[in-house]
Length: 155
Image 1 (spheres, helix red, strand yellow):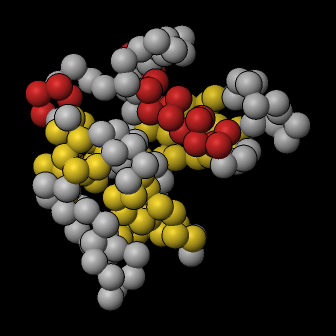
Image 2: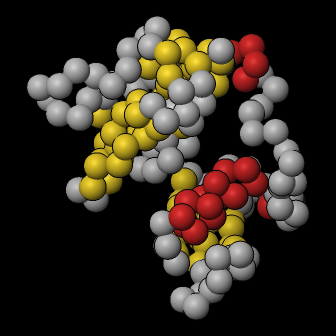
């Protein structure tokens, strides 16, 4: 997990008014806490553990003007990643058609899927303009935070 991922978690916490977040994966553990009366712009106290890699983690936050896409994104397409842990659904109901297919042109407001988290159905929008080139998750399968779900060719 890099600082970009941590910043994305913090942004999701602010957006959803969460006061605590904890993630533990293999040799990585992160815990984010915000005091109950914290204003929207206040920093979070962050505790993280990387047993063999603590020295490799930068302590400065990423620059605000940093590009949102990695350099390889221009050649391989843009990935739409899961903003949360949950169950991925391609359609609003079993009887309905899928939101998108390979070849579908999307814009930033196009709903591409649903993610069910804690019995709440969350519509996920493309947030970019392009054409779906690949669907990376099977319907009704679990997704992790930050897991790529779709690839899009920008137009």
